[in-house]
Length: 257
Image: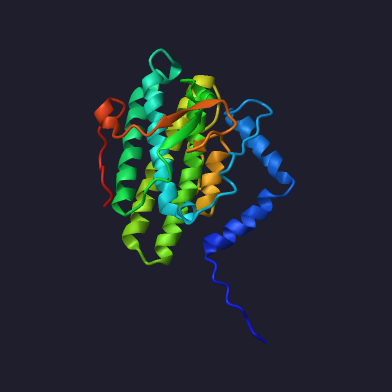
């Protein structure tokens, strides 16, 4: 009997399994639940990004590229949030948002230093996210959940490749993303009065186990990477170093160890 060797990577196998789940009848109910929880799109709006799910070039399965894309998106979102903060409930957290913005940028610098490049520097951001209030911080908290999983993918891959420096970089960045999630949840709950402990995690949840599944999770929130989503919104372009345009602030340990 001849045995055929399966040359697919762990990431490829996970993506194949996830695609089966995505094609199941439960897909729509899961996405509807996310939309309701996030408050990012209007009721009844489809969350799929046209043309994105069908196209999956190799760069979209690279965890470093996806993480660089997330960090560029984070800088773009937080830069706009800082600009719109005056006169809104988010203004009281301006210093927190500015520090987080710089953190996202230095993460991107570190990833670029290892050869990673964002898939795009143009992002479709739902208008509901930029409300200057609870929806903004809820969106940040949800995105940080995705990014924590994405960095765990990076830790796993770097470990498999015996890349200690890479694993440490991903772990160090993951730690600060978890801080961002806690602060975003605290800000959201302060604004809307939700009574929820923001740091109620024993271990980080590993929900998205591949680069492409992490990318799809963010797209499901109504974000478009170089393309419009069906959520009402607008395109924003990566603005560069937030410390140079007044939307960032200095941070400690701006480089990985």
